Image (cartoon, rainbow, N blue to C red; front, side, top):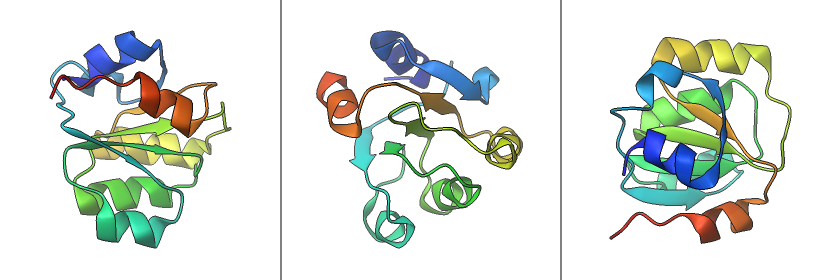
Length: 110
């Protein structure tokens, strides 16, 4: 599934790296808010659902190879985070739903 398909499936707000959503592929889902835990446990090519919004989430996504970040519960995202996501070409999307509600609705088709 591409990030674009995921964005449409869940009606997610696009906050950063909109140009990247067409071709970026998602193969797994990871939910977590403790950055060190995400580093040790998330898989590459995942969509990461979190309420963390500081610039460090982009660094973690790059380190792990996460292809997309979804911010749950309409959390406010720091402008620096969005700038860094644009630089690193990591799509950042947002939903008013909880992380659990978002994950329940994702159908990767695998």
